[in-house]
Image 1: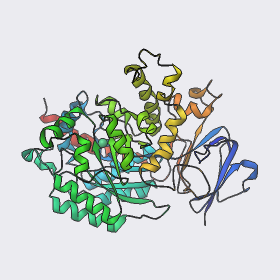
Image 2: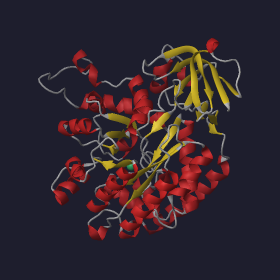
Image 3: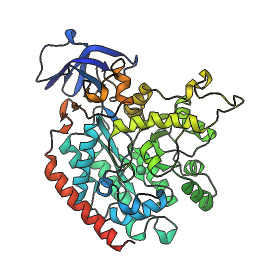
Image 4: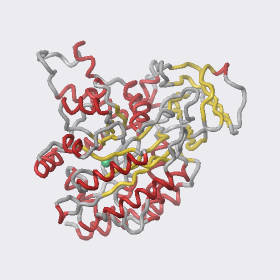
Length: 475
Ligand SMILES: [Zn+2]
């Protein structure tokens, strides 16, 4: 059974139940599972792979709870740069629908390589357009090439424009085929076991792109197989107007009638909620994927993350798709989560009778997100959102998913009185090492498992071809 020893880290951020931060420490791994975490002198002396982490900080691998890897093909698309969600989606749908199986492989490799280099070790991807022979299998095999722990969604869209949905009819699928393929991928790939590298999630795209019947049937199917459920919700006022106009209900109430509130469900964004809906999430166990960069990029709003945490709602970080981020850098996302939570304090008056309190007043202390909180929701929080108890912390018995960052850089100079906070406060750095399932996947900020130069070249060729076709017909 292969072993790995990571030693001499300046500090190890365990995120274990005691949230211990250990100086001059490391860990020992056997067969993908952490056996020991502690001071370097108490660890074994040797292993099949030995990483000397002198001058580095070691953290648990980040968990990305919302992404659309296919969107790496349409980053910074001119037609989608300066508009909000609905017109932005309309600018992209037909381009995404032209993705081929080979393009699916390439975009998955590109997105996962960038994520792994930013410390991400588990990725949930929400792909919901399957045209041109594209199948979830293309992405699952690409994730295997890189070696990232992968939760893949069999997403869906079935409500075209002619039926009152947002996507063009050419981009939606037949519902019977969606459900058949959902069953197929679950039976072929879903691994519920501890330490699993591949899980399947069912994920209709949004209330405005699928029918009520598909929402209900998808929930029934997911529960019959014990797989997770995911969709976008409460992302924009346009979406709220849509469900109010069409169903006479706010989005959360509408999803409740669909059988979609439960501890096997998490929603991306969840920005436009009131206090009752936050309590409803807490009561029913619904989780949230917070995607701050996308929410700023599309002017969607600011999710009440500190309120969610105060109500014990499960919250993870998601980078969201690369057409609305346009990065797959989860350390950057954790930093933005902290900053955006703070911006919210400045924009909103204190609640209740405490008017005109300074944002630094001790009574408002609970509204501030700290660097360590940002790290926690990016690790333990994400693991909880994905329903996993085997990732998100460095402790014996947990999966060996971890990454290190070099502290002796210009970017961190002057911040080493608190290197843990520096990882969030200072400019996001690439991982020196990322280890997933006990295997080194990133070294010096680059993936070691796949030769990326030809992948990027082919990816850029596909990207130019897809966007070019669209731009030619656009104003
Ligand atoms: Zn999304």
